[in-house]
Length: 466
Image 1 (cartoon, rainbow, N blue to C red):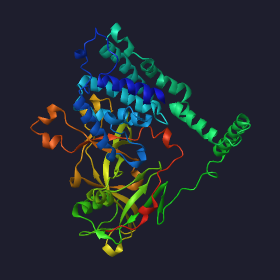
Image 2 (image 1 turned 90 degrees about the vertical axis):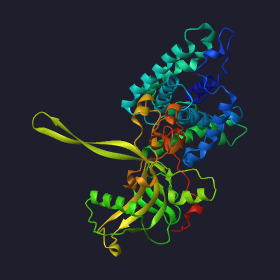
Image 3 (image 1 turned 135 degrees about the vertical axis):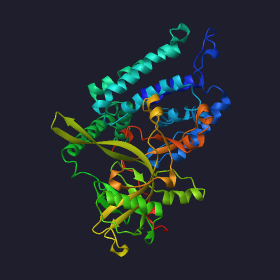
Image 4 (image 1 turned 180 degrees about the horizontal axis):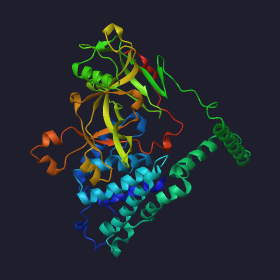
């Protein structure tokens, strides 16, 4: 979708770099929004973008390259999209003035909703309001009713105000934007087999494609392609699949992990004998229903210690459930369950099934994940950035929780978040602002992922060390 991925991103980057066309009556000193204008700052920013690529899972496709080196040489629309709507809220946190950062985050939050495959009704209104606010504040802060800045107000800027109304009128943008259209054109022209009658052949190919699409819509299960499963995979149901590598033998878990496991079992009314020391067999990968593959610190950290470039796929989003009792009148009350999202680092997957040998967990058949939880997203930052920047602190071994693998929603990226100057000067800096990361989720989940799944490499199927 050229509007969001190329036109708007070009305008945003031009403002940050301060390299938009400028007249003699417009002093560059007045462009206080151009936080990346200095070449040294721009080069340092580009290195941060390049370094962040290893924090993105492989399922995110092409990570943004260093814009200081590559932005004018084949930078893809996909890279622009993740650079602006994924990275910029976090990477500009420490260098951009708060009022301009908040303004940018309105665009980011609205664009993320516009890029969704399925747009929840309750999110359309807030997203539209954010985009309209972005356009109006743009005119106040950047254009400022100055004739010599009139060229700032491009047609793409006005197009933002129509994104969500058009979403309601004709559906999500992935249905009618350039991406599906160009993809269809490319596929059909590649199928042309008659050079003497190309247009007739193209029409027949289009007709056949329409017939196949109709059959798929009528009989989706009968025509569904079988999922490629590596050797030794375990189908868990609900489209969750446990995959190798696997430890050769069960091992005792550390005390912190054991306490987390016992707490989980107790909360699920499972008998846990006193003094029970759990032994588990570790698994390394889990395919999710959305096609992503979640990996583990158990295996990825081995590669990182050996100096191998590892695209981290062990950070996941999981729901946290809480109950709220609501009263209606004097006698009627009900218990409503709410869910909020949290983020964690998968340490390892493991199964628990009638472990009589260890003297505990009788009649249990579960597939679980040991997770090191991040803190909840900072509420102040979340509010100031209109939900665009979720900043969480990594707690390591201090926060172990066990979750059912079917509670894992998706694989996300957790990218280091640099502190602002006032945060770095805070006396409690070490306990408040170190080991802090910001969340980058797969945008839209998503028009580029329709009909795809992350391929599980066969060479990863070998059993691993304990």
